[in-house]
Length: 80
Image: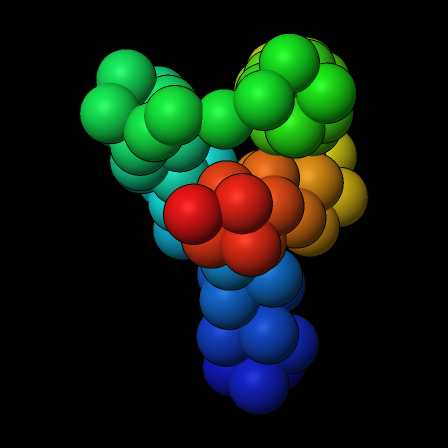
């Protein structure tokens, strides 16, 4: 019974722990966008990925949000 309680506790709070990473990734993207000098296409793609990630985060889909946000960061890094 204790094992089941520990597993349920871990699963319940794991989502909350992961959800905290999304806002920091959004802030990182916003900060990099302010100083980056991107062409129009690259900037549009980064903003689209950022907005999609934020939307997924708000829907509670944190793993999908993190993937989109990390792609936006990769696009920023590639364009610089």
